Length: 77
Image: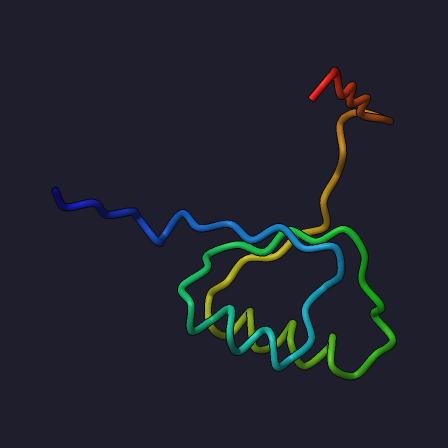
Protein backbone atom coordinates (compact mmCIF):
# COMPACT_ATOMS: atom_id res chain seq x y z
CA UNK A 1 0.00 0.00 0.00
CA UNK A 2 1.31 3.42 -0.91
CA UNK A 3 0.50 6.43 1.22
CA UNK A 4 1.17 10.06 0.54
CA UNK A 5 0.30 13.47 1.85
CA UNK A 6 0.14 16.89 0.31
CA UNK A 7 3.00 18.81 1.91
CA UNK A 8 1.61 22.03 0.50
CA UNK A 9 -0.94 21.94 3.31
CA UNK A 10 1.38 21.27 6.24
CA UNK A 11 0.78 23.63 9.16
CA UNK A 12 3.06 23.87 12.15
CA UNK A 13 1.67 25.06 15.49
CA UNK A 14 4.28 26.39 17.93
CA UNK A 15 4.20 28.28 21.22
CA UNK A 16 6.97 30.75 20.35
CA UNK A 17 7.85 32.28 17.00
CA UNK A 18 10.77 30.23 15.63
CA UNK A 19 14.34 31.51 15.65
CA UNK A 20 16.30 31.68 12.40
CA UNK A 21 17.86 28.21 12.87
CA UNK A 22 14.44 26.61 13.24
CA UNK A 23 13.11 28.70 10.37
CA UNK A 24 15.71 27.05 8.11
CA UNK A 25 14.57 23.60 9.24
CA UNK A 26 10.92 24.56 8.73
CA UNK A 27 11.66 25.74 5.20
CA UNK A 28 13.59 22.57 4.35
CA UNK A 29 10.79 20.41 5.77
CA UNK A 30 8.24 21.83 3.36
CA UNK A 31 5.95 23.38 5.96
CA UNK A 32 3.60 25.86 4.30
CA UNK A 33 2.31 27.76 7.34
CA UNK A 34 3.50 28.48 10.89
CA UNK A 35 0.95 29.42 13.55
CA UNK A 36 2.50 30.77 16.75
CA UNK A 37 1.18 31.91 20.12
CA UNK A 38 3.87 34.35 21.27
CA UNK A 39 6.77 36.21 19.76
CA UNK A 40 9.50 38.48 20.97
CA UNK A 41 9.72 40.98 18.16
CA UNK A 42 12.63 42.85 19.66
CA UNK A 43 14.97 39.89 19.22
CA UNK A 44 17.16 39.95 16.15
CA UNK A 45 16.67 36.25 15.43
CA UNK A 46 12.90 36.79 15.10
CA UNK A 47 13.48 39.53 12.54
CA UNK A 48 15.82 37.25 10.56
CA UNK A 49 13.45 34.29 10.71
CA UNK A 50 10.54 36.45 9.51
CA UNK A 51 12.61 37.43 6.47
CA UNK A 52 13.68 33.82 5.83
CA UNK A 53 10.13 32.49 6.03
CA UNK A 54 8.78 35.29 3.84
CA UNK A 55 11.39 34.79 1.12
CA UNK A 56 10.70 31.02 1.15
CA UNK A 57 6.95 31.59 0.80
CA UNK A 58 6.08 30.15 4.21
CA UNK A 59 3.09 31.94 5.70
CA UNK A 60 3.07 32.76 9.40
CA UNK A 61 0.48 34.23 11.72
CA UNK A 62 -0.30 34.69 15.38
CA UNK A 63 -2.89 32.28 16.74
CA UNK A 64 -6.21 33.99 17.46
CA UNK A 65 -8.17 31.75 19.86
CA UNK A 66 -11.93 31.77 19.45
CA UNK A 67 -12.59 30.55 23.01
CA UNK A 68 -11.40 31.91 26.34
CA UNK A 69 -10.79 28.50 27.86
CA UNK A 70 -10.80 24.78 27.18
CA UNK A 71 -11.97 22.36 29.84
CA UNK A 72 -10.55 18.84 29.80
CA UNK A 73 -12.07 16.18 32.03
CA UNK A 74 -10.10 13.00 32.56
CA UNK A 75 -12.33 10.20 33.74
CA UNK A 76 -11.07 6.97 35.26
CA UNK A 77 -8.17 5.81 33.17
